[in-house]
Length: 140
Image 1 (cartoon, rainbow, N blue to C red):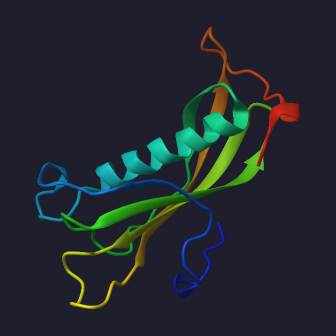
Image 2: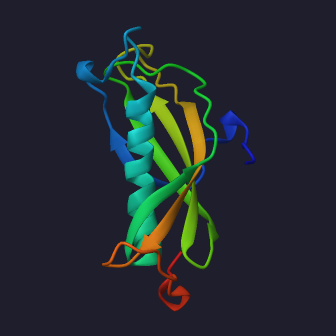
């Protein structure tokens, strides 16, 4: 997985934008990493469905490293780009960037990367079994 410099900004399309709430905090008071992972999976699965034009299921997540904490009230943005389309699966590189509106300076918004991961989704049919992706229907 190649990580562009943080100063380069988000890579890919904005797939999801949300704000964590107090119920999403860990025992440390920061946003629970599992909540961030679930937002990434939601964002990635939407893109996977658009690419495959089928139902999909998450089958693999490459390692994640949490770079900075996320706080209640921060705007969390998930960006994604397709990095591979296989016979039955699609891999999407996802990045999470945060804009800390409540914690930023009066006239300044800083945006920073929180984490990234490559998530692989498999195309599945109505019977729940994996199925080939019809590459003639793919629009990237």
